[in-house]
Image (tube, rainbow, N blue to C red):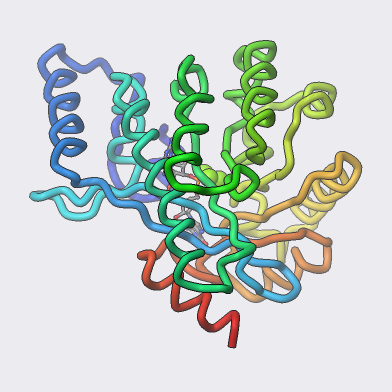
Length: 281
Ligand code: C2E
Ligand code: MG
Ligand code: MG
Ligand code: MG
C-alpha cells in the first residue's frame, strides 16, 4: 500500500490500518450510495500494437465521480470496497459497462470489429462463487462474443490458492474469455504453475518499463519475459510506456503490445470512438 501511495502521490485507504467500526460503516455506506446514485464511471485506456500502433484493445478503469471530492481514482476506494465486499457489485457493474460499451462501439464503428476490452478483477471477485455466471450474463446481455473480453488478474490472486484459481480460470476459459496476468513480475509466480494455467496474455508491470531505456538489468528482465511469453504462446504487453525511448527499447525486445500515456491516457468512450475513426481512415 505504501508503494501505491508513493507512486500516485496521494493518500489511500490502507488495508492494514485499523478502522473504527464507525469509519468502516461510513465507507461502506458511501460506496453503496455511490453505486445507487450512479457516481461510478469507466474510462478506457488504449492498448496498441507495438509495431503498427494500431488500437488492439482498451482497458476499463473505474473512477468515482464524487459529488464533493471530484474524480477519484481506484486507489481511493478499491481497497475499501475489497475489504467490505462491495467490490463484487462494483466489479460486476464495471464488467457489464465494459461489455455493453464494446458492443456499442461495434455498432457505431466498423473499426471496432476486432477491438478487445480488458476488465480488472479483484481478489475477492475472483474468489466469489458467482463470478463465472456474472461474466456469462454480462456477455449475453451485451450480445458480445466471449473472445472479445479479457479478464485481468494478478499473480498473487493466482498463487493464493492455486487449485481453486485453476478451476476458476478453466471455467472462465470454458466460456471463451481470454485471461491476462496483470502487473507481472511484482508478485511471485511459479513457472511450473504458469505453464499449467490457461493464460493468454502477460502484462509486464510498469516498474520494469520505467528505466528500461537506460537500465540493462531491466532490458534483461523484460527480454526474459518476452521469451517466456513466446515459449508459452502468450502475448506480452508492456504497461506504463511514457516515452519514445521506452517504446523503442521494448519494441526491439519484441514485446507485442503496449499501453501507456505515450499512446493514450484513460479516456471517455467518445475519445476511443475518435481513435477508431482515425484507425479506419
Ligand atoms: P492496472 O490494472 O495495472 O492499470 C494500469 C494503471 O496504470 C491505471 O491506473 C492506468 O491509468 C495507469 N497507467 C497506464 N499507463 C500509464 C503511464 O504511462 N504512466 C503512469 N504513471 N500510469 C499509467 P488507474 O486507472 O489509477 O488504476 C490503478 C489500478 O486500480 C489498476 O492497475 C487496477 O489494479 C485497479 N483498478 C482499476 N479499475 C479497476 C476495476 O474496475 N476493478 C478492479 N478490481 N480494479 C481496478
Ligand atoms: Mg489492469
Ligand atoms: Mg497493471
Ligand atoms: Mg498496476
